[in-house]
Image (cartoon, rainbow, N blue to C red; front, side, top):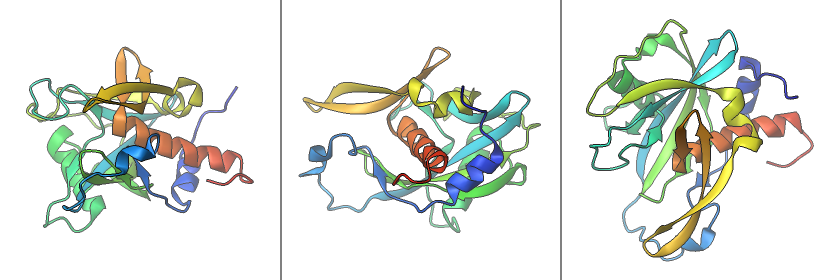
Length: 210
């Protein structure tokens, strides 16, 4: 039986050397011919962790079904980096406050993990931070239908990670998914969670390469 993950585990995992992750990691051939005449748009998300009695949990959101893009998907709080944002950390904190009412003073930033490139043209900087357990979400209804916490131990357990496939543009592609409590966490969100899980696993097996 795996022991429960702790803040110390997270801090150690975040300190590891960063490597680029992508929607194309499972199917590299799909990146051939992708139009990159426009640079990837910078974005940032907050992987907010909360210390609960039963262990660490992760704050996630569900996008409204009425959104033009990513409707109904499970996502981290986050979005595009604006010109006035000092850095990706500032962008992630600003977006979290706008979307779920999480004040920056209620977050202790630990640091970034692997940047993640999406098939929709974003380069996401995932920022990991500890969130005050007393935080109560205040949702922006146009962007967030629901905010909830999921247990980190479940999300980091490779037994719960699924490899699925779907058809986009007439071609089959594979993607990661983590079903939890009736919710379907998939795509870039699942990919970034796997990135954190890989870092934690590397610390458990220090002789292995990342």
